[in-house]
Image 1 (cartoon, rainbow, N blue to C red):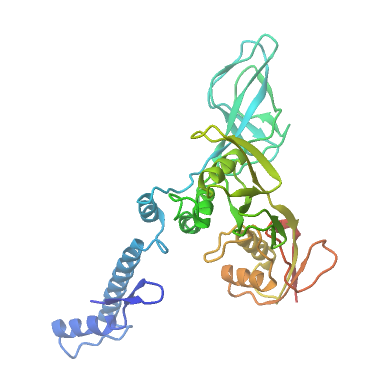
Image 2 (image 1 turned 45 degrees about the vertical axis):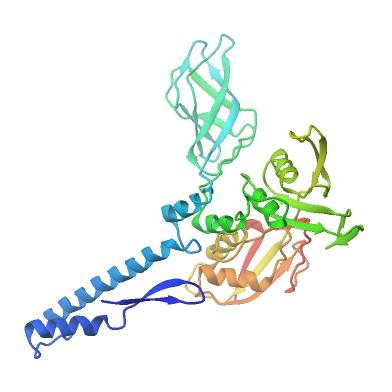
Length: 395
């Protein structure tokens, strides 16, 4: 049987299958005699090869299963179980919701729960309860997207009745949809587990960032601390004496403020352009909690690749979209304060499709002036790389 060994610097268990073929062939010769012909083209050779492949599959499966004890490699329910030991959990998928949707038609018409309407893009929304159209010919109610994920619907874009409900004639949404999300992927879950290791502590920098990353909707952040008794400018940010500065992407502002008040060191001041007044339950004292939101910097990207049989015009924009969202293993994506590097963009393309030969990556902040240098991003900024801002040039 194959041996198992560790890759010491990573703690990964890998099977050593080098001796499997010799092992199986020796067994065949012991049973059928030393003169048996085990060439791959013979029937007995095919049987021996099949046995080798079966054993190889088993030992590789065992190695993969053994690796699930390592939280840096684990996935699926194994990762969920390890994370649960620390009180953490994966962010579940949610639906998009529409509130105060107008349903119009014949008065007295009953619109059953689960009745459907379509957006101009074909997304399906369904009613959450049964509705009865009032004497005015209209009733308002809430709807939910049928599928999980970030399904968008702007004002007035829900305009087609999809269910056959006699008397229900029109539908219209007067508000934007509250956007849902997909379930957190293994890649993002493993990353967030590391980012929240200190969520049960307070006062230190990792405790503050861990508790912030635990909040729903928080994607990235930057943190700085002035531990001196003098006013300092750190990375371009003005910090009061003995104070902290946090710039947070995503999340509810009041939840962020509550976390900062709970986890920061007693006596430390806040910095930032957003101020939320909170009452400390233990003392009854009011605190003006400050933090910042990142300013978005739109990046334009031009990728030059050699012609090949691969559909580079589709692969590259998709790859860079995944990269910017942090969906490539080993890379956090475009987070708060991260510079944009042409070399990292090239690496992201090759991580998704190694057969594409990238010859040059050019960047721009206005879509006119292009260069191959790194674009610096301040700690109170975040780079955005829209899919429509990516050009692919074939040479």
